[in-house]
Structure formats: C-alpha cells, structure tokens
Image 1 (cartoon, one colour):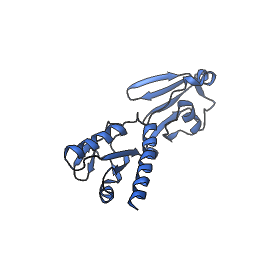
Image 2 (cartoon, rainbow, N blue to C red):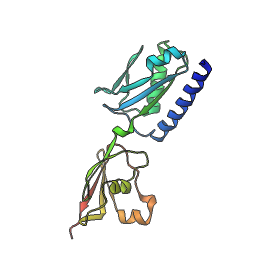
Image 3 (cartoon, helix red, strand yellow):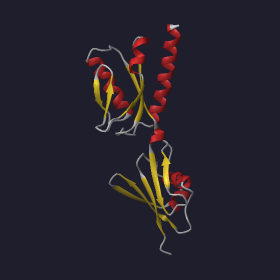
Image 4 (cartoon, rainbow, N blue to C red):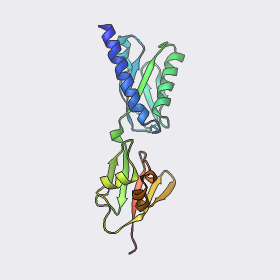
Length: 187
C-alpha cells in the first residue's frame, strides 16, 4: 500500500512539474492561488504541507513548520527551491521535494478599444495578441489593425496585425497582466 502511494505521489508530482514548466516565466504576485505539494517525506507528513495556499498582500505564503516564505516576484521553480531549502536548513525534512502550481484561471489579459467585446481574457500559456483579440470578438469596423498597442508594465509595443497575419511568427505571446488596446482608425 505504501509503495502504491509513493508511485501515485511521484506521478502526480511529475505531472504537476510539467504544468509548472509551461509557465516558468510567470512571476507570482499577491493574491495568487497556488497549490503546494510535498514529496520525499513519510506519507503522514505530506498531508500537513500539501494543499492550497494564497500569496498574501505582503507577498508571502505561510508554510507549516517554517513560517512565512517570500513568494511574490518568484517563478514557480524559484519558490519550490526556496521552500525546499528552508525545510532542509531548518532541519525539518532532509530531502523534501516541493511542487508549486499556479491556478492560471486567476490570471487575465485585458483587451479593449476597438474590439467587439472588450473584456478580461483568461490567461493561457499560448495566448497571443491575435488570439486575445479573437477571444474579445475580433475587430470592430472602426479598428486600426495596423496600430494595436501592447502594454506590459511600463513598456508599450506597437503591433501591426496585418503583418502578423502575413507572418504569424510576428505574433507576440502574452503574459498575465498584459493589456491589448486596439486603436480607433482616423478614417
């Protein structure tokens, strides 16, 4: 029975690692809902740590036995390593394996301006500017398709969707928190 549990836990951790690797570039932020799983320890100990967590307003997660760990600004991999290190350094577990997965359905990209249905589009790792515009109903008849703004943090990037349609490799992959604004045509 213990062997079956170990195999199940190993398979679960492996599959969660694949999900986490898809979104490695995504940085955690306050309010993110995450799932933390513990492996490499006795089964009874796994249930004390494994479960849902929320990154608090100060950017921390509160972990059993070790307290608060800074999470905001880290990738999933970075947080995994920080938690594992803290458990080892505090001599709680000698060889813990931590897996962190982010509930991506809580992440969005804003799409506005001259689109048929301006909205927050749920983030997926393959979401691009063109697919986000499509998810928002496509362009209105007043849209300037040669003048689409991508706002990412403090940076603004202008994208010509007409060129993207001719050469799909020019389509920009979006990140959570990005905003896509379709500018109105002057004519």
